[in-house]
Length: 124
Image (cartoon, rainbow, N blue to C red; front, side, top):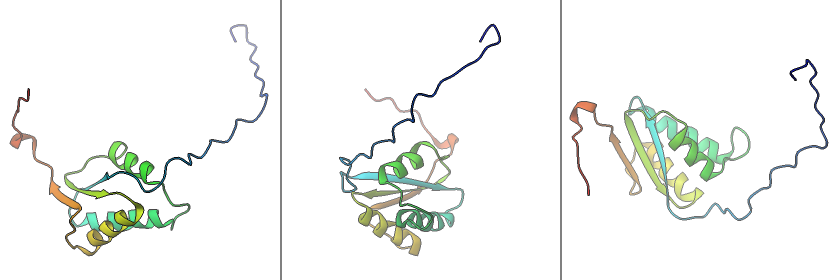
């Protein structure tokens, strides 16, 4: 404190975070965004995400957490791919197709446009 005295008291351990049982893995359609510097890296990224979904490196990751992290916490690189999914199984199926280099109806892949090629659009 201001007079040179600091103190604190721990009354009890913080409660463990409650597991949200109301958030099932099967849910409405969601989009999982992936991006890489080079298009050849996208299948490798898909393989890594499949490993995380299977729990190869520890507990299996929750789909909402994975989607949020990829959408908001990763840098958006030029080569992009989006997977539309409604369950862990449908996501794994689409990522397996990406990993094999095959087309899939719920996978959209493209390259981000350069700043010079963008045009201003007014929408009312």
